[in-house]
Image 1: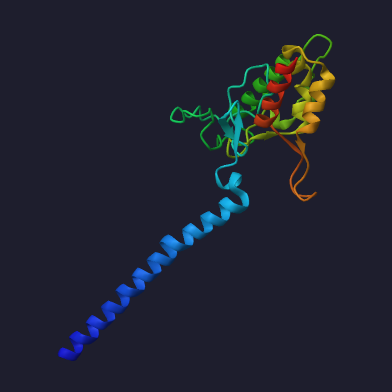
Image 2: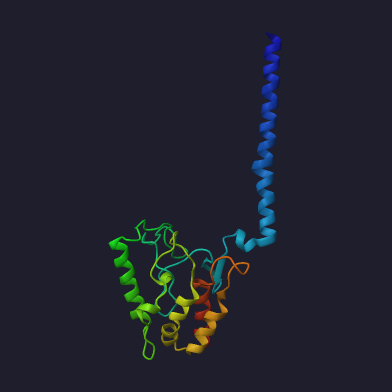
Length: 210
């Protein structure tokens, strides 16, 4: 009986010691080490890829925002889930897709309405946008609804409207788009893209210089 109790106590003691050691290793030392390495090597990404303007954080390069006026470049449409009223730092949409099928009449109507709006908003004196000019990302949301980038084609389609509303030359705005166009990752992964928030910050700075 005494041996049984002694063995049980020994096993419990060994288990508690193992639990304590593993808790310290995996719950304290490892997280601190990973956090330290992340902060030392790529602190911006570790902190959410924040973008600052005018001395304050205005968003993340990884999260799309809505609510830009027509003076600015427009992002992809939101996922149809509305604005996150809890977030007070910057406007974004809740993550998610509409779940509408490709042959949904509701989705087709949304796309046609969005295309008509893009044509209307971006047609300015001397530059008329045709429905066939509108790229897919101008009228459809991404799977998450939080895509931060648009295609170079959609950015270029908006150049004349942005230039006219900001009193800038078309050439200057076109150069801005070109300078902010990112190529494929490693040269072959994905598609070229333009980060909307970064482009709009640069646009605001350019307009302020005029």
